[in-house]
Amino acid sequence: MNALLMIGRLRKAHGERVIYDIADFTLDESSAYVLTGMNGAGKTTLLRTLAGLEKSEATSLLYRGDLLQLAPYPQRLRSEVVYVHQDPVMFSTSVAANIGYGLVSRGMARDDIARRVEMAMVWAGVIHLRKANPASLSGGEKQRIALARAKVMEPKLLLLDEPTANLDGAAREQVIALIPALTGAGTTVVMACHDRDLIGLPGMRRLKLRDGDLIYRFN
Amino acid sequence: MPLLDATLAAFGLLFAGDAALWRIVWVSLKTSVAGLLLAAPPAVVLGYLVASHRFRGRRLVIWLTQASLSLPTVLIGLLLYLMLSRQGPLGSLHWLFSQSGIVAGQCLIAIPVLLAFTLAAVQAADPRYAETAIGHGASPWRTMTTVLYEVRFGVMAAVISGFGRVISEVGCALMVGGNIAGETRTITTAIALETSKGEFAQGIALGIVLVAVALAMNGALMLVQGDAHSARGRP
Image (cartoon, rainbow over all chains, first blue to last red; front, side, top):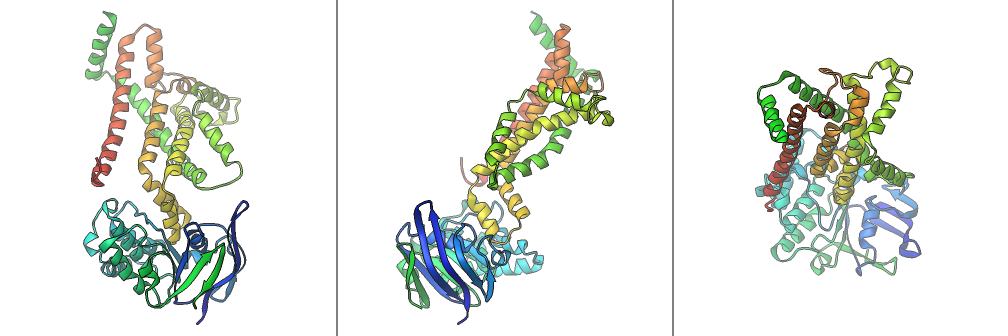
């Protein structure tokens, strides 16, 4: 399997405190990973670093065979990596416009955006919320819309930060049901989580952050 | 009772459609709105940039912005007077004692207010808005417009505060405008002049207009905010 991303010596510290110091790690194309670790282990920071939202030091960065730099964050990664917050925010517009936000940024034709957004809303089970005010949505609905907003971008790397952390019951089940469809088809998913049902999904590889290192993987 | 008589006379002037009085109101509104329209785009953009970027000297910029909020408008008027006077670097514009000069002054007065309020609104915004925009491929410009839209009530409050500051100031308009009847006489300079002459009726009438404008502007903002809150299902 081809490597999507290879990072050499990735280090993040706040003053004296080292958040992580990872010798090197590789993410394969079209693969799914769960990233586990104790609270405060640096899972979110690592995902945010990969999304270019946090700064970390890295000795090398190989992305789809091309040597890049982590800082400043490359524009190419900006357009191919999508990060979804643990508690995603909705822009103050319609649900459909929220889902199509990234496609508008890409300058896609309006008809294509409408078609893709429609498909994504069906996929996420939010078609009935098309005209809903995003501020009135539940946590589970927001998470599903955020996943749809990420999915329409067809990213090479999708980073999910504990997508079920604030959910329970049916809302959690609905989000878990969407995750398998995000993996594969050219997208690598890295998902920070504690949720055993997510960790146990078929095909998930495991990464664990402990004591600042990515200490074991089941590749 | 002089105050009651003057107030009754003021209402008389307002309802009689006194041409000189409404000309003063028109000059005030025109110069204030023009100054605000010129100041708002650069000040709002600058406020956003200062709030959302880390750079050397940022704290100095914030300090100077906040300090300039308490700058007396008469000092801005003095500086602008020196710039626009015949020997000044901008003397060739012939803006001294003209509405253009007042507009320039109003613009300079409004910029710190707009900048400081926008800066505060963007700093208080949830950082996930910008992160989500950036994370979904938005350009820096689109990220800015997205975040500013999310803090639009703060930006509106900035504009209304800026308007309140410029329409109610007297020092700069007096020094740069010269208080020429029918040309550069504004509500505040007219109130100062009429009061000094002991003619209170027109001053009170203009004061009523000022209060009405302030109430209307803030009422409009409250209505918009109220609509947004009720749309979110909040009290």
